[in-house]
Amino acid sequence: MPVPAPSSHTAAAPAAVPAVPAAVPCPRRSAEAARIAGLPRIDEPREVAPADARELSKVFFRRLRELTEGTPEYQYVRNTLIEMNASLVQYAVRRFRSRGDGGDMEDIVQVGTIGLIKAIDRFDPARENEFSTLAMPYITGEIKRHFRDTSWAVRVPRRLQELRIDIAKAKEELTVTLDRSPTVADLAARLCLSDEEVIEGLVAANGHTSGSLDAPHAEHGEASTEGHTLADVMGEEEPAMELVEDIQTLAPLLEELSDRERRMLQMRFGEELTQAQIGAALGISQMQVSRLLTRLLAHLRTSMLEDPADPAAPAHPAEPATGQA
Image (cartoon, rainbow, N blue to C red):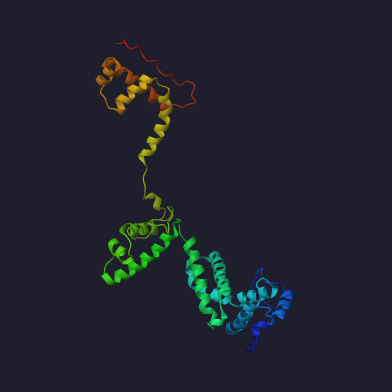
Protein backbone atom coordinates (compact mmCIF):
# COMPACT_ATOMS: atom_id res chain seq x y z
CA MET A 1 0.00 0.00 0.00
CA PRO A 2 1.53 3.38 -1.01
CA VAL A 3 2.30 5.77 1.80
CA PRO A 4 0.31 9.02 1.46
CA ALA A 5 2.29 12.18 1.16
CA PRO A 6 2.54 14.23 4.34
CA SER A 7 0.32 17.29 4.54
CA SER A 8 1.62 20.82 4.21
CA HIS A 9 1.63 21.05 8.00
CA THR A 10 4.29 18.32 8.15
CA ALA A 11 6.95 20.33 6.38
CA ALA A 12 6.07 23.65 7.96
CA ALA A 13 8.46 25.32 10.39
CA PRO A 14 7.69 24.40 13.99
CA ALA A 15 6.29 27.71 15.19
CA ALA A 16 4.58 26.49 18.35
CA VAL A 17 5.28 22.82 18.70
CA PRO A 18 4.12 21.08 21.88
CA ALA A 19 6.83 19.70 24.09
CA VAL A 20 8.14 16.40 22.79
CA PRO A 21 8.16 13.59 25.37
CA ALA A 22 11.53 12.58 26.74
CA ALA A 23 11.10 9.09 25.29
CA VAL A 24 11.34 10.40 21.68
CA PRO A 25 14.89 10.01 20.32
CA CYS A 26 16.89 12.98 19.09
CA PRO A 27 16.40 14.02 15.39
CA ARG A 28 19.61 12.37 14.19
CA ARG A 29 18.85 9.06 15.85
CA SER A 30 15.21 9.30 14.74
CA ALA A 31 16.28 9.74 11.13
CA GLU A 32 18.59 6.74 11.37
CA ALA A 33 15.88 4.64 13.04
CA ALA A 34 13.34 5.67 10.41
CA ARG A 35 15.76 4.75 7.62
CA ILE A 36 16.46 1.33 9.11
CA ALA A 37 12.75 0.72 9.74
CA GLY A 38 12.03 1.54 6.11
CA LEU A 39 9.52 4.27 7.03
CA PRO A 40 9.36 7.97 6.20
CA ARG A 41 10.77 10.28 8.85
CA ILE A 42 8.11 12.53 10.35
CA ASP A 43 9.72 15.49 12.11
CA GLU A 44 6.53 16.79 13.75
CA PRO A 45 4.06 13.91 14.21
CA ARG A 46 1.63 16.07 16.19
CA GLU A 47 1.25 18.40 13.21
CA VAL A 48 0.13 15.66 10.80
CA ALA A 49 -3.44 16.16 9.58
CA PRO A 50 -5.96 13.65 11.06
CA ALA A 51 -6.72 12.05 7.69
CA ASP A 52 -3.03 11.55 6.94
CA ALA A 53 -2.43 10.34 10.51
CA ARG A 54 -5.00 7.57 10.04
CA GLU A 55 -3.36 6.29 6.85
CA LEU A 56 0.19 6.65 8.19
CA SER A 57 -0.79 4.85 11.40
CA LYS A 58 -1.82 1.78 9.41
CA VAL A 59 1.61 1.61 7.82
CA PHE A 60 3.42 2.26 11.11
CA PHE A 61 1.36 -0.34 12.98
CA ARG A 62 2.18 -3.05 10.45
CA ARG A 63 5.87 -2.20 10.73
CA LEU A 64 5.70 -2.03 14.54
CA ARG A 65 4.53 -5.63 14.75
CA GLU A 66 7.51 -6.73 12.62
CA LEU A 67 10.17 -5.00 14.73
CA THR A 68 11.83 -6.30 17.89
CA GLU A 69 10.70 -4.57 21.05
CA GLY A 70 13.39 -2.43 22.66
CA THR A 71 15.30 -1.58 19.48
CA PRO A 72 15.73 2.06 18.37
CA GLU A 73 13.57 1.35 15.32
CA TYR A 74 10.79 -0.02 17.49
CA GLN A 75 10.95 3.01 19.81
CA TYR A 76 10.85 5.41 16.86
CA VAL A 77 7.77 3.77 15.35
CA ARG A 78 5.97 3.49 18.70
CA ASN A 79 6.71 7.08 19.75
CA THR A 80 5.67 8.39 16.35
CA LEU A 81 2.35 6.54 16.66
CA ILE A 82 1.80 8.06 20.09
CA GLU A 83 2.37 11.60 18.86
CA MET A 84 0.45 11.18 15.61
CA ASN A 85 -2.62 9.99 17.52
CA ALA A 86 -2.39 12.48 20.39
CA SER A 87 -5.37 14.29 18.88
CA LEU A 88 -7.55 11.37 19.99
CA VAL A 89 -6.67 12.22 23.60
CA GLN A 90 -7.56 15.87 23.09
CA TYR A 91 -10.87 14.85 21.55
CA ALA A 92 -11.71 12.51 24.46
CA VAL A 93 -10.74 15.12 27.06
CA ARG A 94 -13.33 17.62 25.79
CA ARG A 95 -16.23 15.80 27.43
CA PHE A 96 -14.49 16.01 30.81
CA ARG A 97 -13.63 19.72 30.77
CA SER A 98 -16.48 20.58 33.13
CA ARG A 99 -15.08 18.20 35.76
CA GLY A 100 -11.74 19.91 36.30
CA ASP A 101 -10.01 23.28 36.35
CA GLY A 102 -7.05 24.33 34.22
CA GLY A 103 -4.50 22.51 36.36
CA ASP A 104 -6.55 19.32 36.40
CA MET A 105 -6.87 19.29 32.61
CA GLU A 106 -3.13 18.70 32.24
CA ASP A 107 -3.43 15.68 34.52
CA ILE A 108 -6.40 14.40 32.53
CA VAL A 109 -4.43 14.70 29.27
CA GLN A 110 -1.56 12.74 30.83
CA VAL A 111 -3.97 10.05 32.05
CA GLY A 112 -5.61 9.87 28.63
CA THR A 113 -2.20 9.48 27.02
CA ILE A 114 -1.60 6.43 29.18
CA GLY A 115 -4.76 4.93 27.72
CA LEU A 116 -3.53 5.78 24.23
CA ILE A 117 -0.22 4.00 24.85
CA LYS A 118 -2.03 0.91 26.14
CA ALA A 119 -4.19 0.89 23.01
CA ILE A 120 -1.11 1.16 20.76
CA ASP A 121 0.56 -1.76 22.52
CA ARG A 122 -2.57 -3.91 22.18
CA PHE A 123 -3.70 -2.97 18.67
CA ASP A 124 -3.57 -5.76 16.10
CA PRO A 125 -3.53 -4.39 12.52
CA ALA A 126 -4.25 -7.87 11.16
CA ARG A 127 -7.87 -7.50 12.23
CA GLU A 128 -8.23 -4.54 9.84
CA ASN A 129 -10.14 -2.41 12.35
CA GLU A 130 -9.76 1.31 12.72
CA PHE A 131 -7.33 2.15 15.49
CA SER A 132 -9.65 4.83 16.89
CA THR A 133 -12.34 2.22 17.66
CA LEU A 134 -9.93 0.58 20.10
CA ALA A 135 -8.17 3.70 21.32
CA MET A 136 -11.19 5.73 22.43
CA PRO A 137 -12.49 3.17 24.97
CA TYR A 138 -8.97 2.83 26.38
CA ILE A 139 -8.52 6.60 26.66
CA THR A 140 -11.92 7.34 28.20
CA GLY A 141 -11.58 4.30 30.47
CA GLU A 142 -8.32 5.60 31.92
CA ILE A 143 -9.83 9.06 32.46
CA LYS A 144 -12.91 7.65 34.17
CA ARG A 145 -10.71 5.48 36.37
CA HIS A 146 -8.72 8.59 37.27
CA PHE A 147 -11.86 10.43 38.37
CA ARG A 148 -13.13 7.38 40.24
CA ASP A 149 -9.90 7.10 42.22
CA THR A 150 -9.21 10.79 42.88
CA SER A 151 -12.46 12.76 42.88
CA TRP A 152 -14.01 11.31 46.05
CA ALA A 153 -13.92 13.64 49.06
CA VAL A 154 -13.75 10.60 51.36
CA ARG A 155 -11.88 7.52 50.27
CA VAL A 156 -14.19 4.51 50.07
CA PRO A 157 -13.55 0.99 48.69
CA ARG A 158 -13.80 0.60 44.93
CA ARG A 159 -16.61 -1.90 45.43
CA LEU A 160 -18.76 0.84 46.98
CA GLN A 161 -17.74 3.34 44.32
CA GLU A 162 -19.02 1.01 41.62
CA LEU A 163 -22.11 0.20 43.68
CA ARG A 164 -22.94 3.91 43.83
CA ILE A 165 -22.98 4.04 40.02
CA ASP A 166 -25.19 0.95 39.81
CA ILE A 167 -27.62 2.37 42.36
CA ALA A 168 -27.82 5.69 40.50
CA LYS A 169 -28.65 3.91 37.23
CA ALA A 170 -31.22 1.65 38.89
CA LYS A 171 -32.82 4.59 40.68
CA GLU A 172 -33.20 6.49 37.40
CA GLU A 173 -34.72 3.50 35.62
CA LEU A 174 -37.09 2.61 38.47
CA THR A 175 -38.27 6.20 38.82
CA VAL A 176 -39.48 6.07 35.22
CA THR A 177 -40.94 2.57 35.55
CA LEU A 178 -42.69 3.03 38.91
CA ASP A 179 -43.53 6.73 38.48
CA ARG A 180 -42.19 7.37 41.98
CA SER A 181 -38.92 7.33 43.87
CA PRO A 182 -37.82 3.72 44.41
CA THR A 183 -37.47 2.37 47.93
CA VAL A 184 -34.51 0.45 49.28
CA ALA A 185 -36.44 -2.77 48.70
CA ASP A 186 -37.07 -1.80 45.06
CA LEU A 187 -33.39 -1.08 44.50
CA ALA A 188 -32.36 -4.31 46.22
CA ALA A 189 -34.70 -6.37 44.05
CA ARG A 190 -33.48 -4.65 40.86
CA LEU A 191 -29.79 -5.12 41.68
CA CYS A 192 -30.20 -8.58 43.27
CA LEU A 193 -28.70 -7.32 46.50
CA SER A 194 -29.78 -7.31 50.12
CA ASP A 195 -31.31 -4.24 51.73
CA GLU A 196 -28.19 -3.86 53.89
CA GLU A 197 -25.91 -3.77 50.84
CA VAL A 198 -28.06 -1.09 49.17
CA ILE A 199 -28.07 1.00 52.34
CA GLU A 200 -24.29 0.65 52.55
CA GLY A 201 -23.99 1.93 48.98
CA LEU A 202 -26.31 4.87 49.66
CA VAL A 203 -24.33 5.85 52.74
CA ALA A 204 -21.03 5.54 50.86
CA ALA A 205 -22.38 7.86 48.14
CA ASN A 206 -22.36 10.68 50.70
CA GLY A 207 -18.57 10.58 50.61
CA HIS A 208 -18.35 11.58 46.95
CA THR A 209 -18.66 15.30 47.59
CA SER A 210 -18.20 17.50 50.62
CA GLY A 211 -18.96 21.06 51.59
CA SER A 212 -17.00 23.57 53.62
CA LEU A 213 -18.30 24.62 57.02
CA ASP A 214 -17.16 28.13 56.12
CA ALA A 215 -19.35 28.25 53.00
CA PRO A 216 -22.23 30.78 53.06
CA HIS A 217 -25.45 29.23 54.30
CA ALA A 218 -28.84 29.64 52.65
CA GLU A 219 -32.05 28.71 54.45
CA HIS A 220 -34.97 27.08 52.61
CA GLY A 221 -33.46 27.70 49.20
CA GLU A 222 -33.12 31.44 49.72
CA ALA A 223 -30.09 33.48 48.86
CA SER A 224 -27.17 33.03 51.23
CA THR A 225 -26.82 35.51 54.05
CA GLU A 226 -23.56 37.39 54.06
CA GLY A 227 -21.40 36.42 57.02
CA HIS A 228 -23.68 33.50 57.93
CA THR A 229 -21.86 30.19 57.44
CA LEU A 230 -22.93 26.57 57.63
CA ALA A 231 -20.91 26.14 60.83
CA ASP A 232 -23.21 28.69 62.54
CA VAL A 233 -26.31 26.54 62.09
CA MET A 234 -25.15 22.97 62.53
CA GLY A 235 -23.63 21.14 65.43
CA GLU A 236 -23.61 22.01 69.10
CA GLU A 237 -21.29 21.71 72.04
CA GLU A 238 -21.00 18.19 73.35
CA PRO A 239 -21.73 18.13 77.10
CA ALA A 240 -19.76 14.92 77.50
CA MET A 241 -16.56 16.75 76.51
CA GLU A 242 -16.60 18.66 79.80
CA LEU A 243 -17.24 15.39 81.62
CA VAL A 244 -14.12 13.91 80.03
CA GLU A 245 -12.03 16.82 81.29
CA ASP A 246 -13.48 16.46 84.78
CA ILE A 247 -12.71 12.73 84.84
CA GLN A 248 -9.13 13.31 83.74
CA THR A 249 -8.71 15.90 86.49
CA LEU A 250 -10.41 13.83 89.18
CA ALA A 251 -8.55 10.55 88.56
CA PRO A 252 -5.20 11.54 90.16
CA LEU A 253 -7.01 13.11 93.12
CA LEU A 254 -8.82 9.87 93.86
CA GLU A 255 -5.50 8.02 93.89
CA GLU A 256 -4.38 10.23 96.79
CA LEU A 257 -7.28 9.10 99.01
CA SER A 258 -7.11 6.23 101.43
CA ASP A 259 -8.69 2.86 100.67
CA ARG A 260 -11.55 3.54 103.10
CA GLU A 261 -12.28 6.94 101.58
CA ARG A 262 -12.38 5.50 98.08
CA ARG A 263 -14.58 2.67 99.37
CA MET A 264 -16.94 5.22 100.93
CA LEU A 265 -17.24 7.16 97.65
CA GLN A 266 -17.78 3.91 95.76
CA MET A 267 -20.63 2.86 98.04
CA ARG A 268 -22.27 6.30 97.97
CA PHE A 269 -22.01 7.19 94.26
CA GLY A 270 -21.34 3.83 92.63
CA GLU A 271 -23.62 1.50 94.59
CA GLU A 272 -25.93 4.38 95.63
CA LEU A 273 -26.17 3.24 99.27
CA THR A 274 -27.59 5.50 101.95
CA GLN A 275 -25.39 7.06 104.59
CA ALA A 276 -26.88 4.70 107.18
CA GLN A 277 -26.00 1.66 105.04
CA ILE A 278 -22.48 2.97 104.51
CA GLY A 279 -22.06 3.53 108.26
CA ALA A 280 -23.24 0.02 109.02
CA ALA A 281 -20.79 -1.44 106.48
CA LEU A 282 -17.84 0.59 107.81
CA GLY A 283 -18.76 0.37 111.52
CA ILE A 284 -19.31 4.11 112.01
CA SER A 285 -22.35 6.26 112.59
CA GLN A 286 -24.45 7.91 109.90
CA MET A 287 -23.33 11.34 111.23
CA GLN A 288 -19.66 10.42 110.77
CA VAL A 289 -20.39 9.27 107.23
CA SER A 290 -22.09 12.58 106.48
CA ARG A 291 -19.16 14.61 107.83
CA LEU A 292 -16.58 12.51 106.04
CA LEU A 293 -18.40 12.73 102.72
CA THR A 294 -18.87 16.48 103.06
CA ARG A 295 -15.18 16.97 103.84
CA LEU A 296 -14.07 14.67 101.01
CA LEU A 297 -16.26 16.27 98.39
CA ALA A 298 -15.19 19.77 99.44
CA HIS A 299 -11.55 18.75 99.15
CA LEU A 300 -12.01 17.18 95.70
CA ARG A 301 -14.01 20.14 94.42
CA THR A 302 -11.43 22.66 95.64
CA SER A 303 -8.52 20.63 94.24
CA MET A 304 -10.15 20.34 90.79
CA LEU A 305 -10.60 24.12 90.56
CA GLU A 306 -7.06 24.99 91.63
CA ASP A 307 -3.90 25.19 89.58
CA PRO A 308 -1.96 21.93 90.06
CA ALA A 309 1.31 23.91 90.18
CA ASP A 310 0.06 26.21 92.94
CA PRO A 311 2.23 25.58 96.07
CA ALA A 312 -0.47 27.06 98.30
CA ALA A 313 -2.93 24.29 97.40
CA PRO A 314 -4.42 22.73 100.56
CA ALA A 315 -3.27 19.29 101.56
CA HIS A 316 -5.61 16.35 101.79
CA PRO A 317 -7.58 16.65 105.07
CA ALA A 318 -6.74 14.09 107.69
CA GLU A 319 -9.39 11.46 108.21
CA PRO A 320 -10.86 11.64 111.73
CA ALA A 321 -10.67 8.69 114.03
CA THR A 322 -13.39 6.09 113.78
CA GLY A 323 -14.80 6.82 117.19
CA GLN A 324 -15.00 10.60 116.69
CA ALA A 325 -18.54 11.95 116.98
